[in-house]
Image (cartoon, rainbow over all chains, first blue to last red):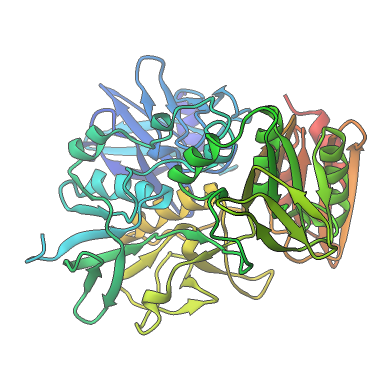
Length: 115
Length: 404
């Protein structure tokens, strides 16, 4: 993520930083799009909240902080929190990955034209 | 908690109920109570007809979350209690034990009960249905090499049981009233392909056949068909559908549609303080122009999560496409969309090798896509959601071949 990326996109506030409990994934409805946001220590990640396999909501799944993955609550597939890539079957297709910007007490994601 | 209202009361103990409980407790720990009629913590149902029935997975492995999870999140769990009455004005649920539970917001996620067969001998020992964990354990212990299993009902459940029983060395007969297996779910053409496959791997099929009696002295020994055929057996499995057990809601303000609890796009019922989710909930389908229940696992997880989000003040509307999957023998199948109404099916791929896709169309609009041993699920979803939504099997196979 570069400054140019951020300027090209639109910043959308998705949460207060204080509302992100450590290692507690949260699902947020961003204008009709489901986004999963999670804070691990000082890092905040945001990816699409709908599993690309059976469309379960990922924020209910088990978080794997050591490998930075979220596990789908239905069939144990996994996604990389940094990239949205599927890292375990039966998931194959990635979910969307969002750049996160933290401005003081607020957490934003960057929405680009494609979103 | 009987003297004061439970802030978030969930009646139900399956996937929808557990999904909702988790999301509610994240924002409102200590204010959530889940009341299940079963004597188990919430567990996953799909393994019951597969790995649990096969004896490959211990029953203890199907629980969605361990006991500590509910304790740590401040979710009170009450097991073994069914809800038998509801007063929406006073906001009180009455349980079978006599206990009254007041609520601020209520979620009904009571699931289904298997449909019964109204024929003589249905109550004989050795006749099984398969809905809950006890059913799966009891049936598992009856299936063994050399035993003869008669399955009445050739839908997904019946076919999964048949597949598991064959894998365990049993002799299997499936009795089905339709012309092919799984006709209701996949239609005649695809059903014919799958039926042929199952026959080839050893399932004896009796199609356009009705079981009229189960005979036996102390336990089931034979199933009589309307043709006069007599199928000797060691065990009978009945898988002829399910219904929502919602008669306890009949005289309330909660609207029902053929037993299903009517909900809007937010999973809210006719009462603003009552939501419903999962197998028992009936949402409006524009395609079918009526409220329909979706009996699939993904729907239970999605609606449970969605209902919880909105019970917390959200306004999220459900947007997922219906999705069902099944594993039978070496067939891995999925279906996205709704196959309850269509006028044409296009099948493409390697049918004889059982690696194919089928597109179901209603007035040239694709309404569902089914895949058997296919990598085209993502492509199917993308195409089903495309605004220019006319596509053919050829488009799908082209996209599938580009899949990773």
